[in-house]
Length: 232
Ligand SMILES: *Cc1c(COP(=O)(O)O)cnc(C)c1O
Image 1 (tube, rainbow, N blue to C red):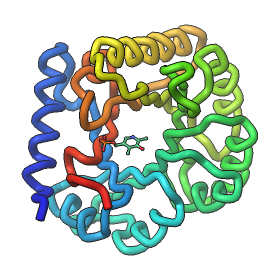
Image 2: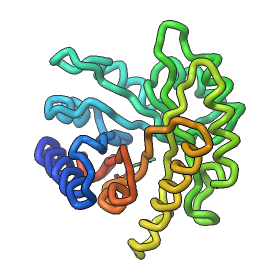
Image 3: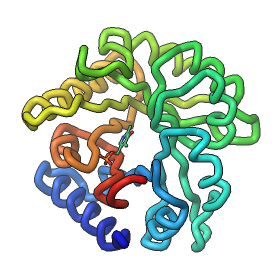
């Protein structure tokens, strides 16, 4: 069986080294463990090894895992559930009720539904707008030129708290080109903040490219296979 605790430790070491290499504080980058297509036992092993934030990309698959793992670690600290997949219209109610974060918002009408459906007893849903940083190569995310309008709309909605931007570079053997995509997203965040938004989250970097993402200012890396091994 794939050993999750040492793999998690190795990912933490990669993040720390990447922070050091770019002169950033060791705690500047959060680790989201992407647990999609992993069994509940794998998540439990990660919790036991100190991991607290988990990313899922399908509502149907995530709900039983949230029910199994709950919202608290054995030490009493909170577990955080992040939705990172495409949001279907008929799934907004479940996402609004069950998740703490959404990284993959691409439409204003979906944002309005999520805000309206967020239960009153919960803190606002923490939201990142997904930006298409790879042009034709990706069908997900808003075009960079459309990001400001969607961010303004989200920032005005009750029930949601706009935190930042998320991006996934197209698979590209050329690591310099992937890094260029991260730079584009980082510059966009800076421009939005200069225009009056207060965004503190840059969700970028995965198992294969977290170093490049951190060098370009990522504040949260979404890492699956490097922690959990192959997906089911
Ligand atoms: C699956 C997934 C990841 C994790 O990918 P790995 O290469 O396994 O680290 C990160 N972000 C999103 C949006 C994903 O769907």
